Image 1 (tube, rainbow, N blue to C red):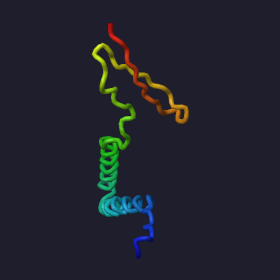
Image 2: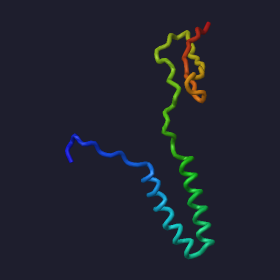
Image 3: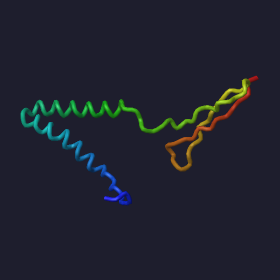
Image 4: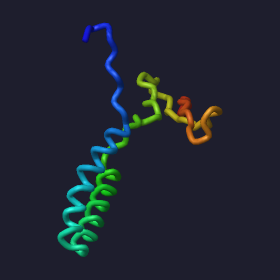
Length: 101
C-alpha cells in the first residue's frame, strides 16, 4: 500500500458487533449455567453500562464563551441568551457590559 492510497474508515457497526460479542458471549455462558444467575448478570451489566454512560463527561465543550477579559473598573459583565435560528435547541451567548454607578 502506498502513501497515496486512502485507508478505509472504520464502520460504527463493527464496533457495535464487537461490544455485543464481548458482552453477549459471557452472558450466554452464565445463562447456560443458571437462568437466575444470567438474569442477575444481565441486570448488573445493564446497570453498569447506564451508570458509566451517565458518569462520563460530555464530549461537547461548554457553549458559553468566557466573559470579556479586560473590563474597566466601573463595568459589570452581563450576558443574554439569544435563540439560534438554525437550531431551536441551541442558544448563543452575547456578552454586554453595564456601567456601575
